[in-house]
Length: 77
Image 1 (cartoon, rainbow, N blue to C red):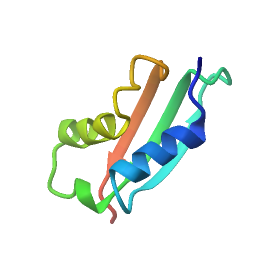
Image 2: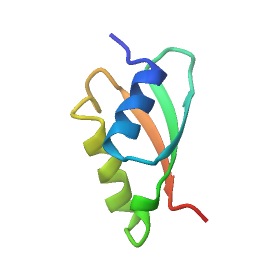
Image 3: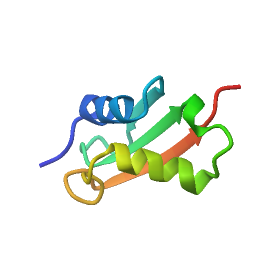
């Protein structure tokens, strides 16, 4: 069963308070998404650390009901 974009957005926002999240369905199949996440919590962290924060916020759904997620993360300008 696929995961809905709104559920992905909610998990990320709940796990990273104050994050601005934009989700796009890349293939129209509900399995392949791109997420742009901008959060003050990312400031001073490496890209790997930022992505780990997002994966942690997804609470184990990555690789299961969420098949593929292309991530773009950054701190606000």
